[in-house]
Length: 526
Image 1 (cartoon, one colour):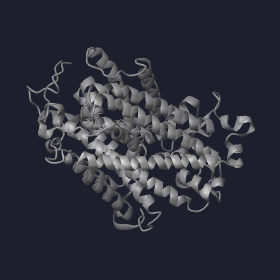
Image 2 (tube, one colour; image 1 turned 90 degrees about the horizontal axis):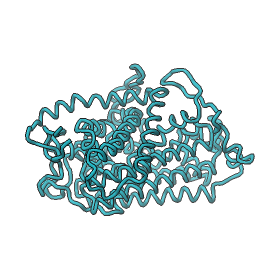
Image 3 (cartoon, helix red, strand yellow; image 1 turned 135 degrees about the vertical axis):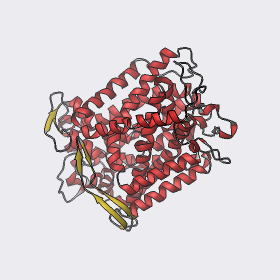
Image 4 (cartoon, rainbow, N blue to C red; image 1 turned 180 degrees about the vertical axis):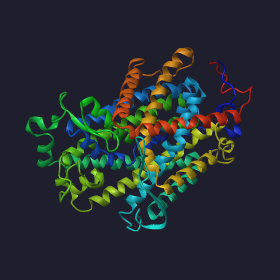
C-alpha cells in the first residue's frame, strides 16, 4: 500500500523551512539527561518504599526501570540512526505502523505527555521557590475561580482541583513562557541553557550521592535496612512473600506476589526515568545524527539511571525504610513516611540538621528548570513534523525566518501548558499517561521488527544491540506491566486509553482536511 493524502516529510522542506544541524554530542546527551532528571528522583522513593516494604525490592524497582530504559535506548538508537528526522518517535511510528499511529502518539504527546509534564515541572519549580520566598504558594490565591469537587466515572476519579491563579501557578506560567521565548531565539541558546543546567543538576545529584555515602551512613539506618546478616535487606523480598495492593480507587485490598508488586511500583520509577527519548524529537538538528543520536541515548540514559540507583541506595544508608507517620523527626518517620514524600530533603535534614531543606530546594530548582527547558525545546519539534505531514496547524510547520526554530510550535505548546497550569488538572493527567507512554514504547519497538522485515536493505549505521532478544524482552516486560496496571490500577490505564482513542476522530479530521492524492510522506511504499 502506498501512503498518500499527506504533505511531504519535513526533510523535503525548502532551505527556508529546514531545521539547522547545530547540536553536538554533548548537547544531545544533555537533552537526554536533562529531560530525564526532574523532581521525581527526590520524591518517588517514598511511594516505592510503601509499596514494596523491602529495601531489596526498592532497589530492584530501579534495576527493572534501568534494564527497560537501556533496552529502549539501544533499540531507539537504530531507529534514530536510520531516520534522523525531526519528530523522532512520531516518525518511527509513522514509518513502521502507519500515519494513524504516529498521529496518536503526537496527539497524546501534545495533549498530556509533554505539555502536562512541562506544567507539572514548572509548578514544582514554583513550589520549591516558595522555600526561599514564602509568598509563592499554591494557597496564596490571586484569583480563585472555582473548586471542582471529586467525582468518579467508572474507574476514573476526576475533579478535586482548584481552578484559578495563585502565586505558585503564576510563577509556573512565567517559567513556561520564558522557556518558550528563549527557545524561539535559536537552538544554540536553548542548548546552551540545557548544557548549563544539566551539568549543574548532575553535580547536585553527585553531591547528594557523595554526602549520603560519606556523612550520611548511621547505625540506625544500617541496622534497619541491612542488619542481621543482611536479613533486613531481603525482608519481604522472597518469592513467597505477599504484598498488599488496593485495586483501583476505593476497591478491595488484595495480596500480590513479587512480580506483580514490582510492576505496580514502576508507575513511579518509570515516570521518573521517562523523557529519555526527547532527543529524537530534535534529530533534524543534531550534527552527524547517525553517530551522535545512538550515542547520546545510551550515554545520557546510562548516566542518569546509574545515578538514580546510587541516590536510592544512599537514601537507605541515611534513613530507615520503616517509620512512624507521626514521628517527630525525619529518622523516626523513615523513608516510607517522609514529609510530603520529600525523601531527599529528609536525607539532607538528617545529615545537616539545619539548612538541609534549603540545600535540597536549591538543587530541585536547578533540576526542574533544566528539565522544563529540555521538554520545551524538544516537544515543539514533534508538532513541527506533524504539521509538515498536514496533521497539525499549518503555521506550526513554519520556522522562524531568522532563528530557524519552530516558533509557532513553541507558542502553541506554551499556551496549552499554561491552560493546564491554570486548570490544576496537570497532576491528574500525569497519573493517566504512564500506561499510554508504555503502550507507545511497545509499539515503537515492535516497529523495529516491522522495519527489519519491510525494509531489510535500508541503511542502518547502528543496529540495535542484542536484536532480536533484547527488544523482545522489552516488549514482554512492558506488556506485563501494562497487564498488571490494567488489573490492579485501572485509574492509571483506562483514562490514558480514552485520551489516546480521542485522537482517532481528530486524525480523520486532519487527514481529510489535508488530503492531496499525489502527495506521499517520504516516497516509501508500504
